[in-house]
Length: 255
Image 1 (cartoon, rainbow, N blue to C red):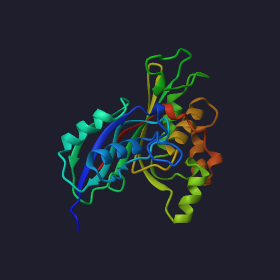
Image 2: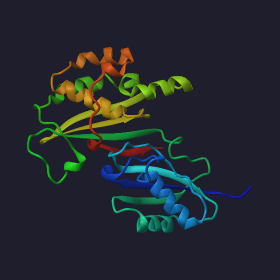
Image 3: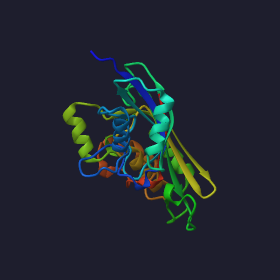
Image 4: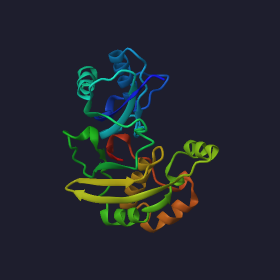
């Protein structure tokens, strides 16, 4: 059997103009496909790359992690430089290394950290506008938002915080919708409200739906005490709105 060399890369990207991480049949404008095409051109062999998280269209990453295998050894720094030479300017590989054969960017991950940023002012932040969700209906109550966030921590069934089609898919495959939420921190920094979500993993759209639910609580549209009931219902309709993609950043992946 031909020896394969396993590589791990870290990368950052501004997701505004991309159709998300995962390659799709109806567009070539995904981050995964752009990486695979460049690696295939570099190596002369088809390369499949696996990301730690399948970020949605418009979602950003400060530290995404990906892994792939090559049939011929290439120096990690050479791979990093080659990718950065040909990738769009809004994607940058920040590190590259060889790893053990059993490392897989998604399956080996122990946890992820996401940050959701809200600009809580009627005056736009013109320099960071693409990376913030502007909510100017009212001043959000961070204390109430934190009270609600604390009720989501620990082992939590995320069925109410994912799209119904995702829930059906998990039911069919017999996989659990329960995840470990290590912490959710809500803080106000001037006009910005920053929510940091840490956990073993999250389902599709979960962080955005959690963020939308906490925003509704901060706006007084629902109570912090309603969270246990929302979780228990396992019904998407019981949770809040899905916050826009622009405010979400994949901050870090833990191994």
